Image 1 (spheres, helix red, strand yellow):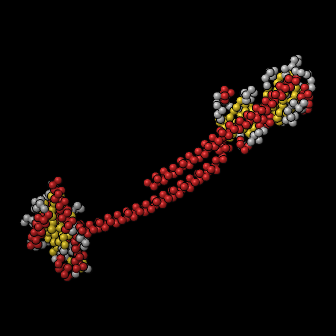
Image 2 (cartoon, rainbow, N blue to C red; image 1 turned 90 degrees about the vertical axis):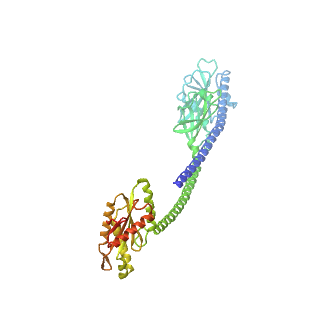
Image 3 (tube, rainbow, N blue to C red; image 1 turned 30 degrees about the vertical axis):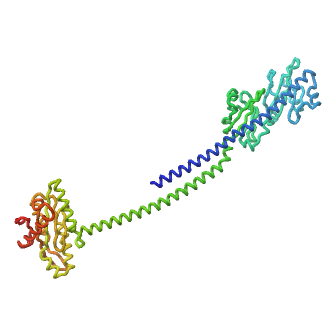
Length: 474
């Protein structure tokens, strides 16, 4: 039980320590995610802001030139290299019906308004997302401030993935996130790994909540991926950047280390349990050996006690044990006032059997006599052998002579029955002397003397009978 408790405690300590180490590693990764996402957001924000400012500056430049001349506005700017690269950006002037009047892209001239989204009649910067030729596009537009009767807009179109081309799988992972969202949290462009999406709603906090968050990352679930996410509104632009890092993907880097920790914990736990099992086995063996030694000592002590208080020939109690039980019976009389009888027995004609048939036959006869004596008394009575052919019987709980008389008659009858010795029939008898306590004596010595004297009177009276201490024959 002790070793089992210790083993359980050790395993709990190992498991708790391992769980603490794994949790500490995971917490370190989460802190690293929060730190990394801030750095990535700083870089992404600076890049997007720089691009947006350049785009807005281009739109304002076109607007300014439009106030100076009515046509060939883009041609004039292009000739002076004041427009962004045509391979990436497409600048156009469109009217209210979406018809392209001028453009740096021949493709846009050919669309004739079928592709452009409807532009609102506002003076602020407009950002719209649309699809053209199977590709996501972002359109930035400003209403021209010229005095034309027909409203016109200058637009700049760029492939939407331009704003997420800086996606770095090394820092964001394959399930990270870069996105531009408007004030309604609708994605203008979003990239996760190699997947591009737009015009979907992201479950993000409100603008006020973001502004009051102290730039603290938070968890989001978008497209079935849990990400540590950071949102930053872009100053003077109706957009916000969104940077997300998949928590599970980043924690996966800790799985091999966690696996090593748990394998080590398992190994140490098994080793500790095996060691404790060995100690428990050795302790059990030692305990069994101690118990065996104690049992052996107890058996030896009982054997010594048996030898000290029993006759080796008949296995009956000897005189020492008889003295002990007589003293005990005398002590009990002081509490219960119950008396007892002491019977002194001597076998008649035993010496002739011993002389004629030998000591071996005599010893066997004594053992047979002992059995008959035990069978003739009550279970709680004591039959003892003093030595030779002399026996003493202690009859407990005796208050009258009648039970003693009945038992002595049984004893006389039992002993005078024939004995079979070495194929021959042997006949003996017994003479019995009786002393009653406390009537005939108050101590063992007195009772033994008077019972012995009564036994001799029985022999003088012809043997094979019983006498009480007084002259009355049974």
